[in-house]
Image 1: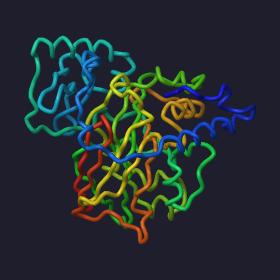
Image 2: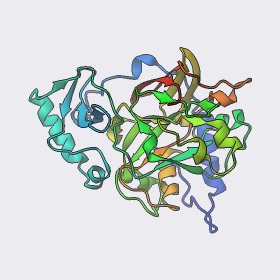
Image 3: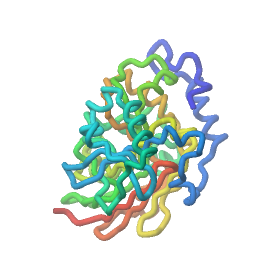
Image 4: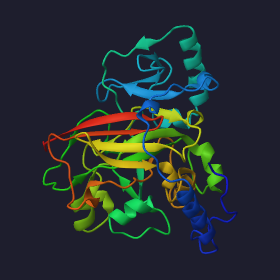
Length: 339
């Protein structure tokens, strides 16, 4: 969690101290990534936490999604009469506690609905911004031939890249090197600016979600300018299937993740090997820009991306991407041709 940070994360020049970087390095060594236990990915909450169950979802056709709270694989509580959407306004109102109470009351009373094959949208409406972290796993940096960063590398993606976890990923016109990245997503719960410490960041986080940070490497790496160019094509941010509140994840710094393409395992990792953990990232980003409620932070990817293979392997029309992350569910996308 956030224990063990040095007292001074930044030095007098505003740069990350050696002491902090050493803490992260030691954690990476002592907590190596482990394989994904598929039987644990959709586990029910333990009985001592069942009363605070909060898996927020949005179901329905694009532009007409309704907010619900997942109870299990078959049922949910409809929240459309009390919440207009899981958007900036919802998170800014700090309504999570009220919604939790409503979900508990309705589920206890049997006021649940059943999934009928509805489309699953992203668990949050289009955010104010998507902030991404580059090279946040040392082994991923090595496979791309780049140095491990001394400070987090920040870049943005266009917010309209967000789609549902089972929607198609579309290859952009002229793209030749479309790649995959399984990532932990952080959803901001309230406005964050100049946070005092990584420990303080916890109260500004609404919860966690699963993200596929789809990328076009030629545009990102070979066309000059910022990485945003290779990150912001339509459909490049499948997100969900649900937002999990913090109380549902006992240790966000120990979550296994994986990604397959056409049934072949390409990525296996664990959040414990991040260079900069989620709490530090929220604190760090808040020193440079204002994070708004509902904003999404995509925290970086472990090794196994297409550009890291020799020769590189990139997505083509007809490919199928499947990814999963402990407690945050699964995604599946079909790759389709340019429109």
